[in-house]
Image (cartoon, rainbow, N blue to C red; front, side, top):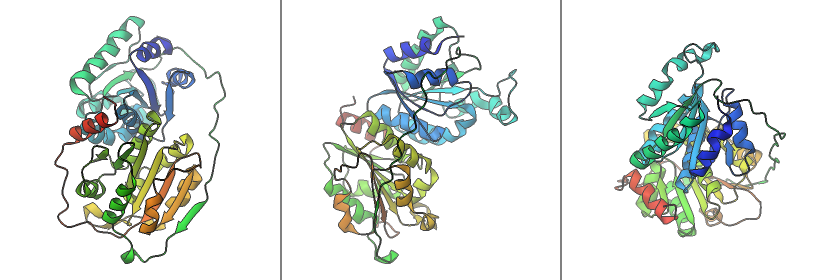
Length: 383
């Protein structure tokens, strides 16, 4: 058994100062220590997949980051582990508890995952080791993670057993974020067929942004491909997987790099998939984050199947979650103000209704995802 500080302090000395996670009773002493540490940054994620994406965003910004989770939530993290961190070659440390481990009495819902946790990491090509339970094993464990990051530039996992860390209770009462509800500016006035196209909105948006300080993260599917078609730029990242994680990736980058303005261009299907992150964004309130949701009420890139966004008030949800400025519009006239600075003290959200469809002969990026990320990180001075 170790004290949490026995791991956290040497990890901090090696640069690990950004954590995102979802609590677990096996993690309690560790996560409590991280939360109260004055030199660490901790983001409480809505789910384990968002924790991975938030940590990945911080890593893109040049931070050494850690995603913490219970193994029963490992399934939530599989998509970003396989189609975000693996695809873009983003190194981060995953600390995952082992509920339902052999010989450990536990709840019935942990039985199956307890049996397959190691195999899950093997299957998704994330090398792993046991989380160190003795002080003299901590340095070598951190060195192993560092060596993997240098050689493979991808996640490395440590699986924590029950009773690894000495008890550590929170010494301060957790403070809930101050809830702020913005007034929604509403300007929906056109029939669906009369609305602007995705391509028109993206072009108008790009024309208003400053490539020297603005980073654009485009959701998977046609959004990233149309942004690429408009003009490939080093400040743009085209997500090719991890559907729904664009906003959590953007949150991690925005929090880690307040010198940048991060513009997330989301889709209605993607946003519906991980709506919990709107609450996380609203709670942490980075005022350098602009979240633009392009909503055509269909899954465009898979054949135009309807989403349920026609029954969803995204702007109202964002306002209730704590975004600082919220607008709902279907007019290109509102686009030039999407990235404007504002004094609301929080992130900006724009729900932009568009018509379905994409440009003809829509290209796919000729540059690979690792090349896109490497170029972006050089552009923002992260490497």
